[in-house]
Length: 148
Image 1 (spheres, rainbow, N blue to C red):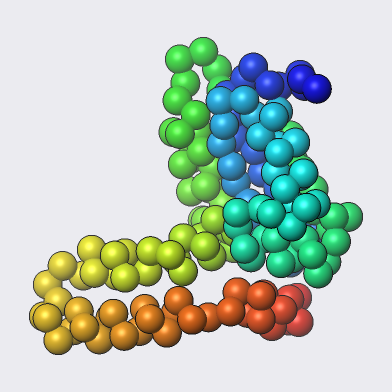
Image 2: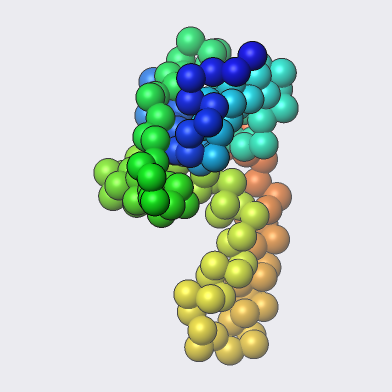
């Protein structure tokens, strides 16, 4: 079933009212993307593990699907996405997007941010990253939520 925003590009946000975390998504068919996200969350198949864990533990009622930011003609949806993400990051919001990104890309991010590392230091970073990747997001999310 088509929705009113299906033909529009834009950025959408899903906010957890319990812990304040926000997921930011972008799409060229933003209405369909929102419906898809809600459906996948309900089926336990959403691609963002931390958000899926919160949905499963805290329930659908703790999430709010905010009105999408639609792009104007000639605007780039990716640029709008980055602006909104930047605004949230500067407000000390923990983005679901960042939790997954850090887990998946921590080695390349650390090494690219510190280009003058020696080989021994790079190996140390790799060892740290191996341990980061072993973190159980579900357990971490549960622990973080216990402080909220």
